[in-house]
Length: 615
Ligand code: GCB
Image (cartoon, rainbow, N blue to C red; front, side):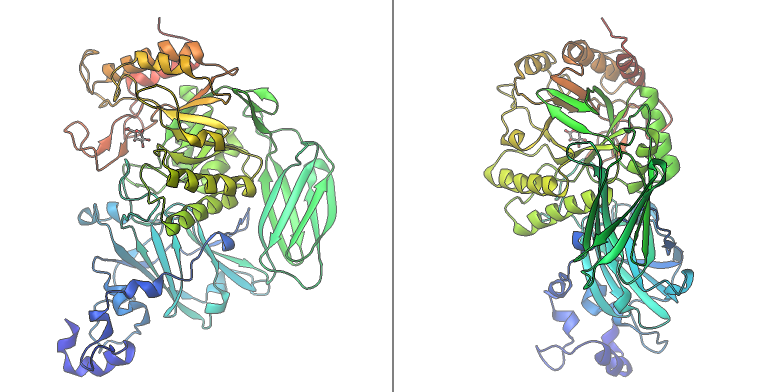
């Protein structure tokens, strides 16, 4: 313990405040409320950027990393340490092995597999502006694509802010903090499960910790385009463009938009940090069979922003969903963001492989469960013509009455929408999964519904609602706030009576489209037997056959059942699954955790989507 070194006492007291408790005490040893000072400022949706196709500098290489189970770093202010070989310190940001971001610590060392707590990433950035064209680089934006769950940023010993939420981006203008050509960047990430978090303490997936998405720097001019919205106008005749700058401008700024495929070049004005323009051109609509994207270029003052954007209309009426005015059946599949070797870290290759499997199944629609997936997913879906359900982790039991929890959920929703608003593939925002109907929860979810509608009035809202087990009906006040009713049903698995599925569907009278957002059963790939042996591939295949015999009578674009996303494409890690066959995995995948081995049920669902039904 550091305090026994008399000679170091002086240097320690210089870098760490003395306690007010007594002259012989040092604050960090006695302070239990140390976290209070790191709760603000929050880094939230107000600084979320939509980088479009901006070229970032990837600063993911060469980080020093250590876990910090007792939170000593925040107590002892490790971020204030200067390089000093003569001072005994419990942490040295400048030593240790190199790690690359993205990383999840759980799969980095076997002893960190179940680690939940704080961990530190440290790196010295050498002239961070160096990678850019210095002339044009007025401001630097730091973007961390996803850090589970909280991340606290320290630059040159100064606490910059804290971001909450494991799956949405943390973006911040760090220009003011960069004073020297060498910059010490330290990030404290913490994945402890708490009652206040979203999700809270109990989920059916693995709680990976770490910075699991890219860490980028963007160079931008002083006045830059923070976000844009490019979509069809409300009457769907033309294109509407809204540009939001990082700050208000005193004098109007001239802006231009070019959509070369539409031979459009239009000037407009940015006033008070915002500008908008209507382009009186009718684009070809984006469809799964023809996922056409238009390159949109925007110049505002000295800044330039571009992206590839598809235009389409998604609506619901009665029990139907319409894509570009035509009723649409949503043959789908659910997926988690999980990987045997990489955990939450995903890659373009992994996503394209996932989509290939979805297509082999005959699925055109993907439920991204149960939290925002990598931004690459919707980008690739835009390109490949898949439809997406995108979700925030409002899951099972949350602390619905806690104002901090409401704020956090609302912020995660905003960050997701602001990140992905221009992705044609996303047709639904999902607000919640299997949450029990109480007053506090309905109040909480109605706040989220209002936020989603004001951020994005063009997409449909959904949620996975609960079926009342006694009446076999949906008696959930949430249905008033959403457009498409999702239900997770496990008739024939958790609920043994498969015939109850028939009763549920027969009784479904809501004048809104119904989607089965989950149905499935566990099976271990390669474990064979007869249809009476639990956990065999045959049992699982038989489960889907029994489901299909009923579902097919109600399934079609004309409603009421307009979509199915079986649970789930791949087996995924779940520490709450501890039976011998499960061994820490949820085995409901139609494909095993190797993402290669198809179980028998895969073909059963594939046949169903292609119109071949079991008798
Ligand atoms: C559900 C949950 C999902 C679980 C699944 C299961 O209803 O929404 O997160 O993984 O059931 O396998 O039990």
